[in-house]
Amino acid sequence: MPSLNVLAIGGPHHLAHFLPVACEIHRRRTMKVTIFAPDAADAAAIRKLAAQLELPIPEVVEMKLPPLLLRLLPPKAHKLARILFWARKLRACDAILTAERTSTILKRIPGKCPAMIHIPHGAGDGAAGFESRFALFDQVVVAGQKDKDRLVSTGRLPADRCEVSGSIKVSGMLRLAQDRVPLFDNDRPVILYNPHFKSRLGSFHLLAQRLVDAIVDDGRYNLVVAPHIRLAQHWDDQQRAQWEALAVPGRVMVDLGSDRLVDMTYTLGADLYLGDVSSQVYEFLVQPRPCLFVNTHAENYETDESYAMWQFGDVVAPDFDIMPAIDRAFADHPLYRARQEKRARYALGGIEWDENGATRFAGDDPIVRAASLIEAFLQGRSTRRHATAVLSPAQ
Image: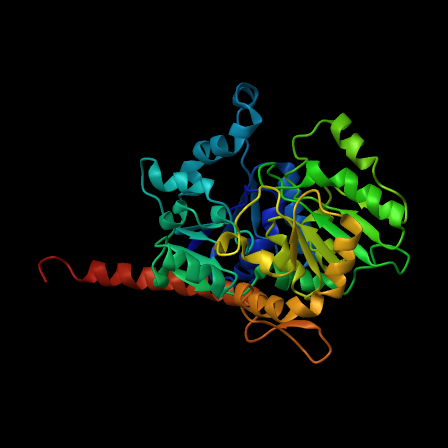
């Protein structure tokens, strides 16, 4: 039986993009699946998500490092250190599945490396999501035709090494959506503020305080401040407390690190998306709704594919007049809806809406399809190896 090692080292926000596929392959018993997690907390998150999705969980191995090494290395180096320290065991398989790209170091260090399969975490438009390390993967499974077209057109991958499955995360999270309760216990429309974690691109420190003040003073809307989970990852308790103090019961939520930042609770539960360049806008467009974007760095974005998401709503400068812009975004949504639906179909392969507006996937479920694509890929490699072995040089 072929063996598949799954490297779950990118953080909890990666899990929904690939874990359901690993569990589905494990359920089929066509491969021996082993998941490698960096620590006990990540291992617990893996088991929790699998249980929520009612999927069987493969063996989970914690990638422990020697205590001395942990003390000597800065925290930012732990990820790479784990990959290198565990390289021998990670590469002792027929294929490695990962949702991040630091692990491509396994292709570049001495020794034989098995096939590497990549399921990118998200379907955003930023240039970082189409960088050169894609070329090191033997198979890439993307959420939609949008990402395949860009990877192929930029020369990152040949078309035969890139497949479209549909959005694995969206498929999994929609299974859980029916059990979710409203974000607030009142009927005010909900604004989701979802800034990027990088200060060069994001708007959090420019806008968060001013946005909370405007929403509270106006009184017509609820607000969820839900930045990318990495924004506050290394904050100390004092810094977290400073920003969490902006919360107002029944009016404003501030979430800097809970599971709800990564399980689509907010993107499915809000009425308007306010952000900058986060790929989570595509998760919001699972149900097309009003959007508003903040251009924090005076980008000339109109013809730049890395800012294609800014076609989904008005784009404003950081010093914009907040409440009129939000009101206008709601009023102008009909102008953008068709564009949102078209781009969502392109980015999240197979997504569509029934006559009641409910979201569904046409054809195979993305989780099932991705598992089948990986199985077929490994079967094809096995067949080619067998043929090569039969055809000796003497023949």
